[in-house]
Image (cartoon, rainbow, N blue to C red; front, side, top):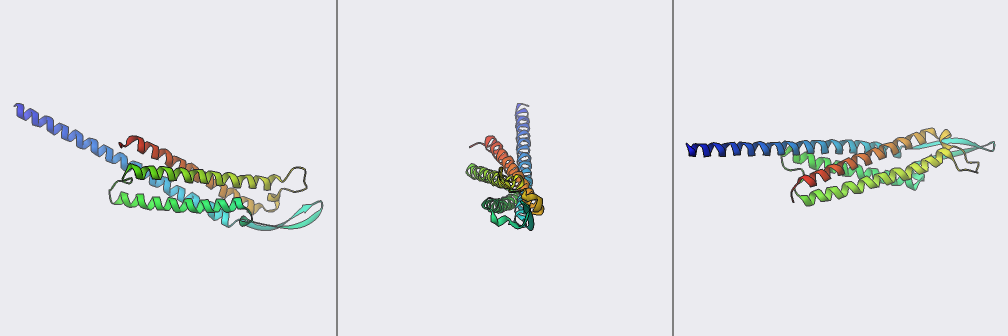
Amino acid sequence: MMMNGHKADQTVEAMNGAAGKEVIINRRRNEVVVQLLLRFVCLVASVVAFSFMVTAGQNSAVSIYGFQLDVSSKWSHSYAFEYLFGVSVAAAAYSLLQLLISGTRLLRKVPAVPSRSHAWLIFALDQVFAYAMLSAGSAAASVTNLNRTGIKHTPLPNFCKALYRFCDHIAVSIAFTFFSSLLLAASVIQDVIWLTNTKS
């Protein structure tokens, strides 16, 4: 009887252990799905950001002291806009790469993050791109604000009244750039949670 009781205890422990492993596996799978969703949305947002930026351009005319002057504006005329375009393209490529890697590992049913060193690398890269997108959006926003308000004590007008299509494209690009930065920051938080819950 005692041997049978001992075997029963071992069976219960084995079942509990298997159930615990299954819970961990399901939790990891859910974390990977969330990460895939974040990567996909970030990819789309980054593509929208640089697409609207690269199509920003318009010719029009403004009035200064009663004189009509032809003006032309294009995204490539500003270093801040070029910086936003470059960073957005890089962020889109990075998001696509991480999306493909994580998706492939999920389909193969292997750990999406094979080691802590790999997790630390992703954590660092997510931070780099999050800050880069934030800085690019901020730099472009300052230039756009100058276009809308003009310069005090000068006759320079609100150029966005004449170049409204150009300014609208830039505004959409900046908005999606900040959104991408927010998504990357969310990925950083998930990286921290993964590193915290994983033993070294």
